[in-house]
Image 1 (cartoon, rainbow, N blue to C red):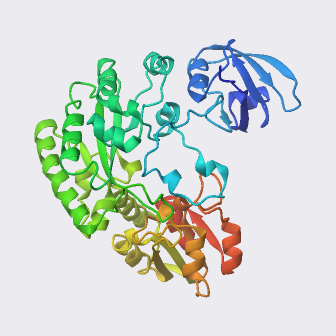
Image 2 (cartoon, rainbow, N blue to C red):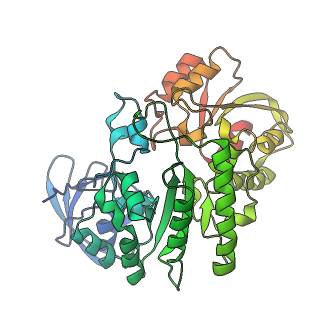
Length: 441
């Protein structure tokens, strides 16, 4: 039986029920109404009651029994160090394109965790394969209505998916999607295209199979993202993978756009979307903003560039002044994949009197990639490209390059260390408003 640890509190929100009662960081919840919560899902479900009896362990190890009366569904105002209070459900596949296996050894241990956990999928939209779930977890998904989940399908033909995931259980995907359909539960799907394995006729079959579940009031498959395989120089040599070439990208775009046309006629929705990277690799124009509907696959890089441009234009109209006091100069670091697309932003910044923003668009020497998305740039790459340069008032650093919640790059270099080596200020920016405000404050 998996051990359930007390849920350690890392933040007590001000003016919350928890703050009023006197909860402190370091306290831990052991049980709620006699049940030990396995994860954040259990915690939220159990806290929906009007009367709660909590067993709490304080930082000194002393146990307290606390009774709380509150409105139904009213939040206690607590945050925890992790969403899972038992153990992470590990991945049991050996996908050759797995990014975790394409990293150098010797970095922080969290980089090598292969999770395939439906709870993280439900809570945060991370992708899972459904190959490792015992019956009791399927029952829990059904009982607690954990929908939508985000599923890495890659291929619907059993032999192709088994080849990709290196797992005989991978061939059950169509039966599993039928299970969701029967229960009126939903998934968002992704297909990572590996040239020579699941492209061409296999990709068409996969998208048509998934589209067959896009029916009814609650479609079992709500949307699909088609994503190019990303390879690094650290990948195993015997992995049979081929990088996506410009020609391949153009073929996939043509193929999927033809299917999209059919889907729009049938469903009044595009249904299956191409990740922005296809157009960047192909050297083609991105689709117009209207084609992305309500951005159902934004976390998969589908429409993220268009949305960023739209959000910037709106924020710039409200926030960017015609001029700034004094003279301000910044170096904005991005992946070379977005260099062309972000030119309108650069032009708008540099139209402000007294403000100069220089974009440094770079590929990743660290990963060995010719075309690099911003989130994969490392401290090594920035040091290699920027050492000895005039960086002005400092570097504008998109937070997508950093480990969530920490000022650390994917290569384990810290932001402070990089700032010291480059002898400059580094301003981490998340989103367009922070980017603009940093430039003008």
